[in-house]
Length: 194
Image 1 (cartoon, rainbow, N blue to C red):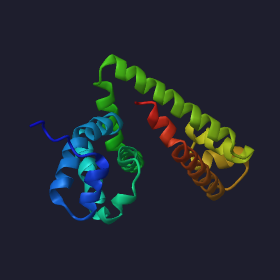
Image 2: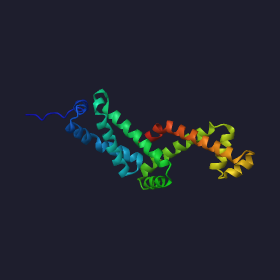
Image 3: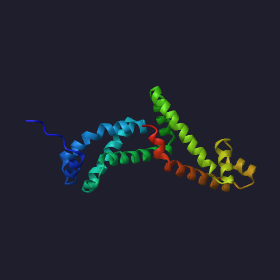
Image 4: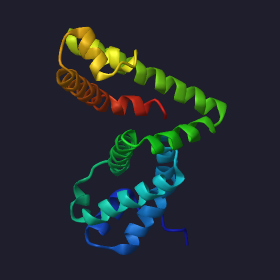
């Protein structure tokens, strides 16, 4: 008697939407390794990638009643994972020690991957440069004096004949604008890793 063909994703999703734990375990086994490999390229952290994989599947289990409405599960799964990875990278961006650890892992990767990372970094720098060009002349001047010339708020205020408080406001608004620009282009930048 020929072996029974494996269930399709759609069949598994229908069973999972009816709270079938075995079907969920099969789906987890089917995708867990591919998802992990995908995430480790983004996060550069085995532990973080494992956590995100578990978090993604927990989210899927919690929303199981709606799974039968998903047309392309694989695309759906990787979209959730990408969003979680972007959340992680935004979180890491605010923590210098985490950034240093990620950079250290990037340095330890093989030469081909380092080339990919350099390309990604060049695109990120280009995106930042483009965002800076979109700033008003005064905000752009404040940003460049602070970030490229390393001047303090007081030094910028003296040079531009404005108050240090105004410098702080301009810099905060500029950084928020650049962050928004980068996060709206984050998917494109991350996609260069794959």
